[in-house]
Length: 262
Figure 1 (spheres, rainbow, N blue to C red):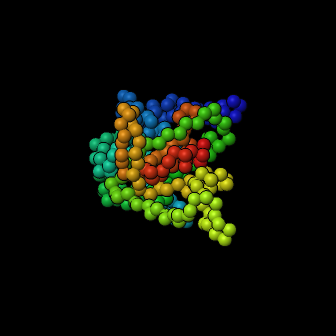
Figure 2 (cartoon, one colour):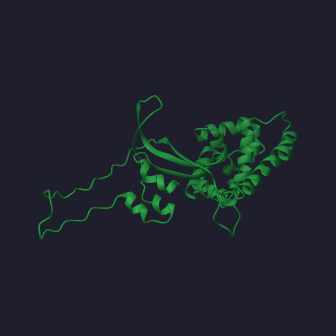
Figure 3 (cartoon, one colour):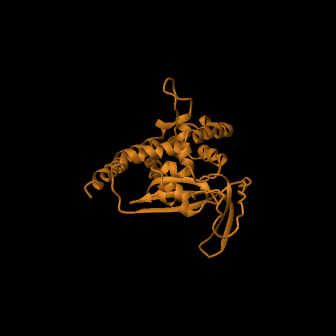
């Protein structure tokens, strides 16, 4: 417990400072009576994530224009559960508070849909979300002992064709022990067997397929669901704090990612 309290109290004190100091100043500046739950949540996430520090890998020049604002919009899209980039832009034009939180004072400053799509693609290539999450865990949770870990997955439907994996043709042999001069090919090790000899979760997860596949599972009503796409696996610890997230193909079995996610 002595290792848990300092780190979590540091997080708690930061949240209290936001609610007692920043929120009143923000409401006064925008002439608001009260911040909504999602607005408060977005402010806290942006403050903890510090996503602006991870938006470029170039250190010898300035960050490209509007990247910081679009990085915040990248987070807001997830917090507000906005499905498309077009819907996000419409929301930024109509919602003054959200627009200011992202960094644009006036609606005319919001960029076009094509620019958003290009920059969001850059963020994906830079692995922006992964880097931000990794720094958060290292800063607040790296030396902390937690009492439990929960892992679950959710389906991610994709509008593309599943990639067919060619099955290796197995050589058929007669039953029983091989003859004296007969040479048989050794059996290929399974993913679980290979993972036992690996030291890091990153190396273990490299064996898991991330290609688009076909997934089947039972829903809460007991009916079978089938989808084309992938799965998002998330591991959380005390306080529902996410520490690991991994994307895989929809046809990946639970046992292949269970050990690396622990």
